[in-house]
Length: 120
Image (tube, rainbow, N blue to C red; front, side):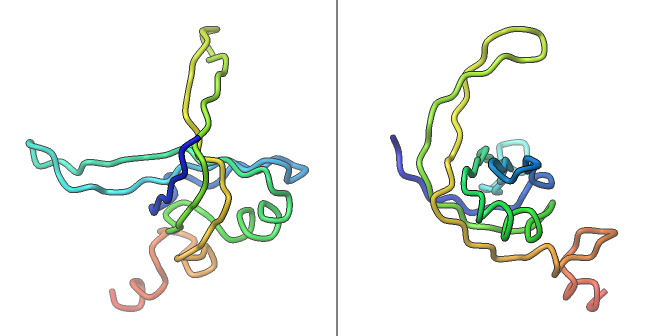
């Protein structure tokens, strides 16, 4: 296993199971620009198996655009795609989560931080 620390913004709202047993979200981080001048984005799929963290932090506190730091370990997983083929992927299993930008501090319509809305 590889130990990893990743900082980024959520690419979408987290998917949390009804019983809070599993939460899945994707973090995206900008890492400069490529030769054509486009943003170079790096993403990682994160999965949390902690009911308490999923229920008390991830479900109510994270949403599209929120910034977070995840510390955890990489695991290889396999799954069956919609077309029936077997696929392999890496997931970052959340060991520790630090939320830098809470969903409650974001504008519901635009997703922008509330402080930015006041400045506009």
